[in-house]
Image (cartoon, rainbow, N blue to C red; front, side):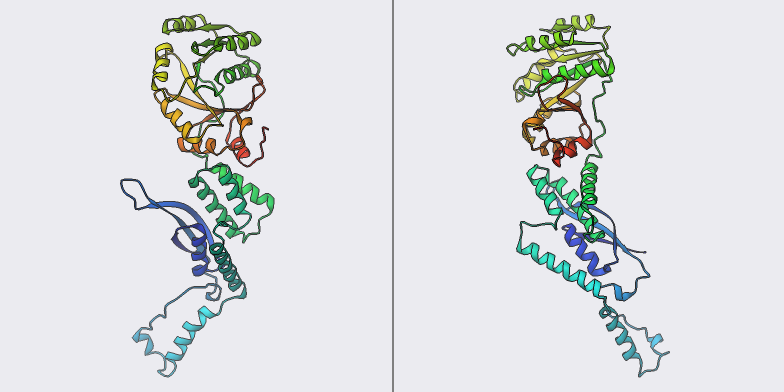
Length: 390
């Protein structure tokens, strides 16, 4: 098999290069984005590297390529009558590229037409139905790098099938390529490995309600003995809210105003399976907030921390919040308020960029109903509109 490497600015251009040189029978073996140039690791130019192959048994008539006329060695010329050499050599060199099948010529004409249309219509950058996926990704605010990676692979599949995939096959391809983007994220779904579970995040993201939902699930599905500690003594009625949940769930609760109170609560709940710790929700841009947590909570105990983020937030805000809490080891994130938005790109972008596992996605105020265990399939369904929380 004749394998060749191509590098182009886009997958569309790469496919054209492959078919121009190797013909309609060429098979794309692999493709990946590569980055070249740049300065100090920044401003690198992105391009596509494609490896394609064609069966060497394919006749030259099936391959469309620009070939240079080969020179005939002098010693070989001596074995052929002088009057026949130029005619036979030139005839063979000229006729091979011209013996092109009708099917290949039609394929090339179709590609030329498509490229011409794309130049005339800059808004249509991909053939249908790939363009519909592209539009959806734009509407969902999916990061451009993720968009290009998925679109490029869909173009490869489209090229190999000559656009002949069924609607179901194409839908499965989209899901598979989007799922592949989450391959570096390893930690999915809530699975408490330590006894003390610390719930942190900015104000207004629903930490207390989320804590109650997670605790209720642990009690109902895992038969765990659960207790609450709250350090949220700043917000009005915050303690009363968690006390109400504790009463409904019939679990004990302690209020910690300082580190000494916290250590006493830890000692009291030493025989419980899981202890959920509610923290104050304050302006995440204030670095003192995170430092204050360290003055109240003893992070040296057997503890894991979950960061709660609202899906109504911008991605930049999510990144700023995550950066602010980075002095505390974050095990996973919990995304809330899925029912208050229909745009989930920020969730996808944040998760992939930070390779951060997701424990839960919540979608309402009902305890413990409006919460789902997170996995890549759930996030893909949300982006593609197959999961509707309205």
